[in-house]
Length: 238
Image (tube, rainbow, N blue to C red; front, side, top):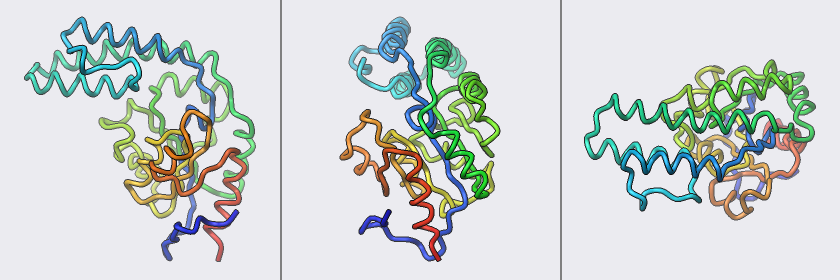
């Protein structure tokens, strides 16, 4: 695999770590997103969030953050906002755990993780799932031991696409942005990588178009995780 014509390798860049997204990248998460969104939206309506601020087509966590900002702007007390967030998280977590039980491991995941480990790459994970669901999935497929760092949405104040989420992984792994590649199937994963100037690899999954992935900052687009071996070899060539 040749590097894209517009991809410039920093002379100091030497990749020693790979950070993965979870859903859509390592596993196919079978969550009932529409039902989860409906229940969350009904809860938001019940606490006074205006209907024009939410949409059934919007990501749940984006909707929740919008609602939180609305409450803060209306000077709602912090303890009430915290209570609201806990109630919403309970709804989301219920659907996540139900989905986790139906989730399947994507082809080649164990093999590529094992190969990366054998080649002494550090491996990280940053996911929008909560701690409980993430732990359940990783243990169910016996892949938890591959990771040097696991950062869920529960572990950071500002989760992806905010770079705080990805930076938390780097901090735990003891690496810098020019030492990693980030692999994800969602534009928000790629945006995180772009915002810290890391190499962004998009796993195409038909959830998002090639155009969306490139616009978000993808340096590479792959269909099979085995293609990572070629990318790493190309970037790390002497």
